[in-house]
Length: 213
Ligand code: SAH
Image (cartoon, rainbow, N blue to C red; front, top):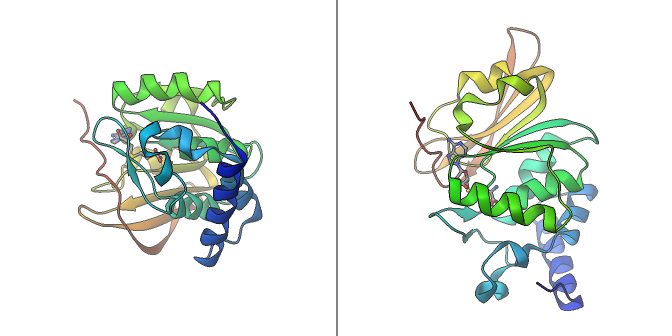
């Protein structure tokens, strides 16, 4: 596994592309400049790593498009020490961005193959979430709640109630909702019972896999 000045140059270019698409948060852009995305995908596709494109990983899943990762990270305005629940670990690239932003991250993955692979891989790069969880994101993580931020990185057919209830007051849930394409939806918890909802445009994610019984 190598990270060279050529890769660094490509990352800088990718950050410039994301800036042109509307990413303004300097910390997020710096994270994109830091993280060796080419190491998160199969080495034979290295050339694709710094394009602003989603790309297949294992188990019929994809590493999200860099713009999407940057958009979700910027929207959640991650602060150092924010307690963040991530649903859909996948390749771990979004996890790495959250960690570059100094969040305390709990990351759930529903597919064992990806859970195993990524929980071994990320620490090798020095990225250490508080916990990797093999489980079902529809349930959230009640034993660690409440969270400052919850990020869902798969297309959800509906908004799972447990995720809303696991937010701190003032906390935010960012979730793409819909079947074939999704509307990026932000919920801000205003009080125990009140949530503000904002719709932030269309995105395309792989579907959130069904709840296990
Ligand atoms: N952020 C990841 C996105 C991966 S794609 C990346 O950029 O690599 C979405 C991921 O969500 C997949 O890994 C998929 O297996 C996982 N997933 C789907 N349904 C899930 C569920 N119900 N609970 C937890 N993870 C789920």
